[in-house]
Length: 166
Image (cartoon, rainbow, N blue to C red; front, top):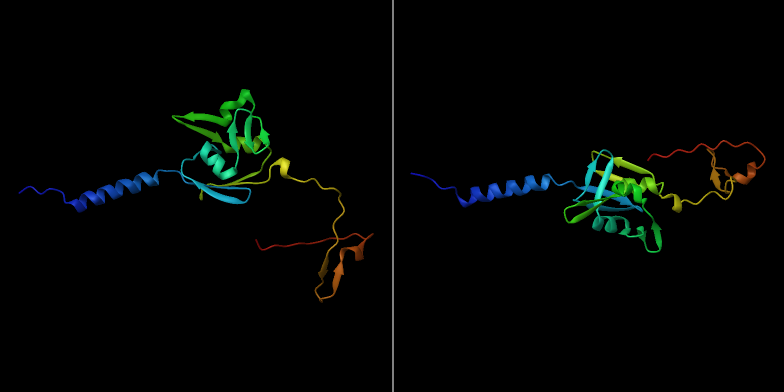
């Protein structure tokens, strides 16, 4: 007697196929302007991060336009001679290299390969330069609880030691 596979066997096979297909997708977390977003259509290779232009807009609020990569009135032109470092076509989708863009705008990057997480710091246009090297006044207690201010030590050499647990 020949047994036909049951509907349950078919459903298990279908479920396993879906799970293995989902496992092959590359999930990436992008932290940009201190906001985290996730994309499934990312390509990470050789330290580069290629994402779709839709994910570019969603994760960074930047759009790819003829004049460059723009957010509202802010636009960064892409060098025509190096366009393939920034933009590639993949079938009907346009992919954008977010790491190459970060290098262009002098933006620091931190990448955790194990967690597929990319953090993009402040761009050079977002960093305010120091108006002076004079430290602002502040008040802190010493080990005995007596409060001191920085102005109490003007004209003297001060060594300030800080520590953080994070």
